[in-house]
Image 1 (spheres, one colour):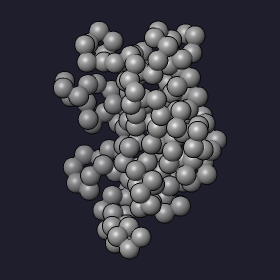
Image 2 (cartoon, rainbow, N blue to C red):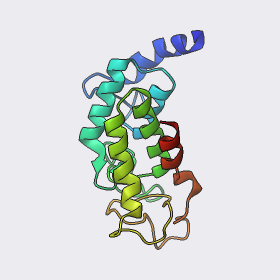
Image 3 (cartoon, rainbow, N blue to C red):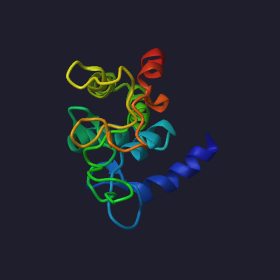
Image 4 (tube, helix red, strand yellow):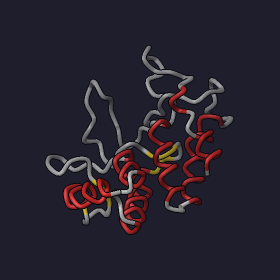
Length: 168
């Protein structure tokens, strides 16, 4: 707890973007408010209750897609190697931490909404192609990089709905 207090004292001023009401990826350079950075700030106890509430409200406003919550609030991270449209791409592995953080701060309704949109999308009758959890959901709501060999249509890392529902 002492280490958390020390880290939190430095973390908040360095990474909290009060104009957005969310944590940013870096204190310098292009501003990106990532799904994982905000979730981990909450899970690690670095976010105050007010910051957690504000951050999730901001992410809900800027990253929600019908197929889950995108990994970033803008496309700054878009590169040929990384991929296009990070503001529309969903990684269920990271979505688990977002869901867990929401449950941790009693935002059960938004956690369940994200579970339904992310895992419900993959398993729904319109988009279901494999009966499994996809590694990533692309900007168009389909399996990300379906034509590319690196994409898994049965990713164990994307099964976070099971522990989230079991634990919370």
